[in-house]
Amino acid sequence: MARACRLLSAPGAACYGALMAKILVVGSGAREHALAVALAGHDILTAPGNAGTLSVGRNADVAATDVPGLVALAERERVDLVVVGPELPLTLGLVDALEARGIAAFGPSKRAAELEGSKVFMKRFAKRHGIPTAAFEVFDDPAEAKAFIRREARPLVVKADGLCAGKGVVVATSVDEAVAAVDRMMVDRAFGDAGARVVIEDLLPGEEASFHVVTDGTRAVALVPAQDHKRLSDGDRGPNTGGMGAYAPAPVVTPEVARRVMDEIVAPTLAGMRAEGAPLRGALFAGLMIEDGTPRLLEFNVRFGDPETSVLVPMLDGDWHALLSGAARGDLSQVHVGTRNGACLAVVLAAAGYPASPRTGDVISGLPSALADGTFVFHAGTARSGDAVVTAGGRVLAVGARATDLAAARALAYEVVSQISFDGAQHRTDIGHRALG
Ligand code: AMP
Ligand code: GLY
Image (cartoon, rainbow, N blue to C red; front, side, top):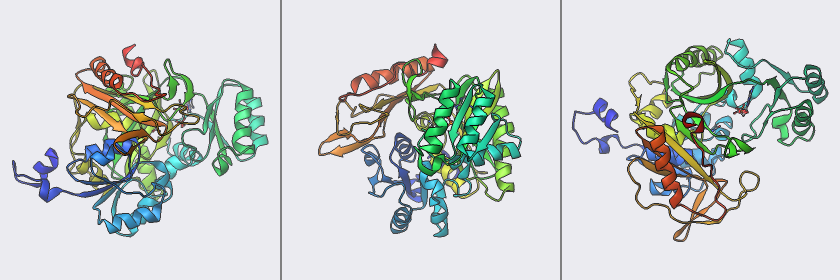
């Protein structure tokens, strides 16, 4: 609040009453709990939320994909701002529907959300605007896709065009694997219509990073560069997941790399979207591959990352409400935020059976009633059951800390992790390994 208070009221004035906004946060993950905590002090309603968001405000039992239900909820509750967490409601046009009723919303229009919703759109957009990304081909005929793979016989990545909850990408280690991916996506339709078209692109070497900006369509406020850990097990082994932990800052994104990302990827993207009549407002999360100081675009998301948000929130020095409502209203010119000193690290605790078939209903014990300085427990798949908190989804909690440096943040984070338990809990013990060794 501090910064908004200074901007909008006399120094030292008590400002909560005057500035308290009613905010609807859409989603139910650690990202949404972290955002709710970032906005605490305002009147927070989360739909559908989890056991964690209940301690920040109220939950409303409306699914994150129920566009008419969410619009009706926002109208009924007379909210000042809707903050949309996940991608699906964005691609379904939630922000357009809210804005049509005069309700401010943080997130892109349905058209701008194509940057995430269609890999074909994203890749062709990048080509049109000279944005560095892997060379690619688009196929809507599986026979042609397979012929291309056999002809090229080099490392390739096969991507379903549409949203597949993070499962639509196969980094193929052989021709057979790439061909099998085409069959699964295009012939068996494992992801339904999302796999009707595929992108097949070159495998890029390097180290990955998650680069987020908040944008009003023209201006972009860069957040601290972060790194995710997508595989289930230590040493980056095991199946792909939604993300098992994150930390920031990511040393691979040097100030020079960050400058290049802003100049070569973010600026042309915002200008390109404006020129194409679909200005992008909200969060732009560029998934990058960085090789010898050169950033290339792997994918765009038009929302905050999860688990990245669990480290972005503690690292931001400034007022989240001013940032999100500035972007939603199309004017970030008065918003000034920075990055805090030190580093932040979050470890995901996942349910038994995650990611293939997570079990729910396990009682979570050891949740700290008071958190030590700098530590946090953001809830994801959790629910209240009587007096207990039980698992209710694949990723259950994001547990972490901000401290003077990454090693201290890791030590603190794992200390909190060691206090919490539930049957079958899984977590990685090496979050931050690329930076810490
Ligand atoms: P995406 O959903 O496009 O980010 O892909 C998911 C994951 O697949 C990324 O986080 C990378 O680990 C990997 N990946 C995607 N595209 C490529 C590529 N062209 N080269 C290497 N790895 C890739
Ligand atoms: N952590 C990756 C994502 O949110 O897509």
